[in-house]
Amino acid sequence: MNISEFYDHSLRESVEVKERTIDACRDDVFSAIELITAAYRGGGKVLFCGNGGSAADSQHLATELMIRLNHDINRPALGAISLCTDPSNVTACGNDLGFEQIFARNVEGLGSRGDILVGISTSGRSRNVVLAVEAARRKGMRVICLLGGTGGDLKAISDVAIVVPSSNAQRIQEAHITLGHIICESVEQLLHGES
Image (cartoon, rainbow, N blue to C red; front, side, top):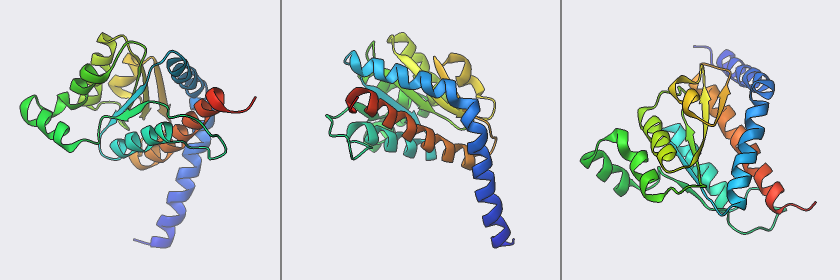
């Protein structure tokens, strides 16, 4: 392996995916911003879930909303929870009910009508995220999914499906965190920024 070529290729591929994402995801990102802003204005909160790197993104984005992203905006906390961060909860559910239920069970216990579920899956086929979306629907929640490739099973069952135009999981995850930052900071600006 030529590390220099790999380095150049990886960065160029990342740039190319993000350039395609600009037009491919624009309308869906704007719709997600509207849904989340409306949920907060109505007293709701945002729940996040995903596996592996998408679990890390769930934790990251929930923290951006709860704490803050733009340091020029002094604002109150925006209610956001990553369903990936409690190992006792996740392992108990995995042991007692099965790994596929780890997010659905928490949506059942923590979600309410007027809340948002953000599911993150590079393939769009993560069974535990699909079941969480189904649980959110039963609770009267709206659903936003950050996806890649064709969008998989989650594309059809989301209110808003943001599908990054790539089949490379690494590049999809890189675009997901960029889009997540744009969404979080836009929500901050709309709710608490100066007019």
